Length: 159
Image (cartoon, rainbow, N blue to C red; front, side, top):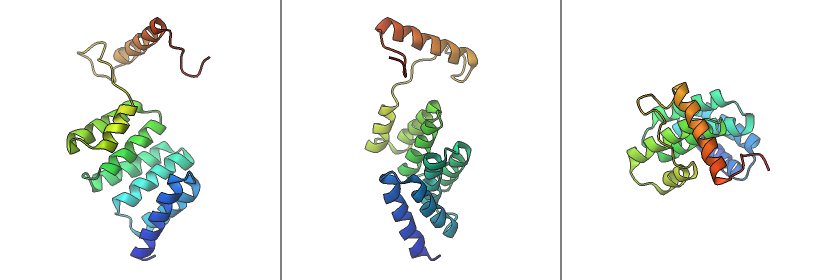
C-alpha cells in the first residue's frame, strides 16, 4: 500500500470512528498502520479503535503509548491515550496524562475540556503516602462515599 493509500485509509477510519463504526474504523487504521508502522497518528488511532471496538485495553494502551513516544508534541495523541485509560476504567491515569499534556502545551481548549470532564481530584487523605497506596485509595473511597451520603447523592448505577 502506498503512502497516499495509507492516508486515505486513515481519513476514512477517522470518519468511521467519529460516526460510531468502530469495527470498520479498526480495519482502516490497521491497514494504515501496517503500511506505515512508525506513524504515530496511525498507531494512536489504531489503539483507540482497539479499545472501542475490541475492549483490549493492554493492546490499546501499548499502541497509544508507543505513538506518544514517537511524537510527544501532538495534543491529539494525549487525548487518545487518556480516552483509552478512561475506557479501561483507569481514570487516575487519564487525569495524569491530561495534566501532563496541559503542563506541556499550556492552555489547549480540547485538553482542558477533557480534563474538566474528568473532574477535580481530591486531596490525598494521607499526604505523606502516594495516591496509589492502598490506605489512601481505601480512605479516599470511604471519604467519597461519606460525602455522597451527606449530600444525599445516590450511588452511581442505583436508583
